[in-house]
Length: 290
Ligand SMILES: Nc1nc2c(c(=O)[nH]1)N[C@@H](CN(C=O)c1ccc(C(=O)N[C@@H](CCC(=O)O)C(=O)O)cc1)CN2
Image 1: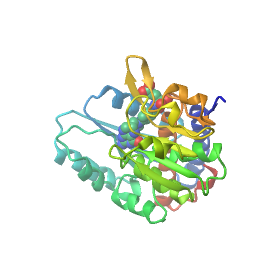
Image 2 (image 1 turned 60 degrees about the vertical axis):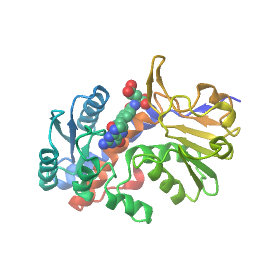
Image 3 (image 1 turned 30 degrees about the vertical axis):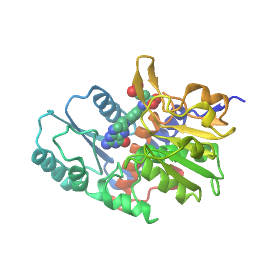
């Protein structure tokens, strides 16, 4: 069996187009465009590329883009003051501080300073808590993108065995919550899990977000399973995922790296910005059409 390749790039393009239509509708109703502010501290090359891509995608979707690039030695107080200004700015519906931040800045304090209504990354404890308790929340972009791909490949998720590898606040934990919300039976695994392959072997749905190239081996995969590879690892061989390439010989469907989950992250960011704009301005945005 050779797995069906889940084309995240194509799905993301469709989502960006739908968000663009929604943004035009928002602009007609609100008399202004939705606005996204992205803050980058330092010159990490990958982060710099992601921030540039976010700005371009925001403009292409018919939204306002506000880009703030700060030097690597920016102190916490300066960054927090910028977040305060963005919180107070009515033209800004979404605020994203690109991660990782330089080591001298307390990431948690910065995330906690963002107005939860503008937290389009969904990282604020209020949004994390709302997701965990089944309330309406802004949901982190990468796991929501994974869920969109999964639901497209797998319209009936209820009752399936889902295994998540990785317990980060950005991907693993919210991914587990989203799968639970879909009535999957969810197993969270991580670096201290014993016999991780024995858990993975049970998975109808596997989400690998561990950040180790080729960590998940072909032999671990249950034949026919749907595999979502969140890993984006830069190696001498190029960009590789957390799942070994030959896993496609066993899986039923699998996301490629690149071109799988990655492009969904920015498309969902635009979606979250439109949703946040609609909620803030009291303009109806049909979230089910996005
Ligand atoms: N504040 C945030 N910081 C970070 C997030 C985030 O969601 N919010 N996620 C990642 C980086 N990221 C967006 O910021 C991101 C990662 C990957 C891609 C992507 O399109 N990947 C492509 C490959 C691109 C390449 O060659 O590097 C793919 O997988 O096909 C987009 C966005 C960490 N920080």
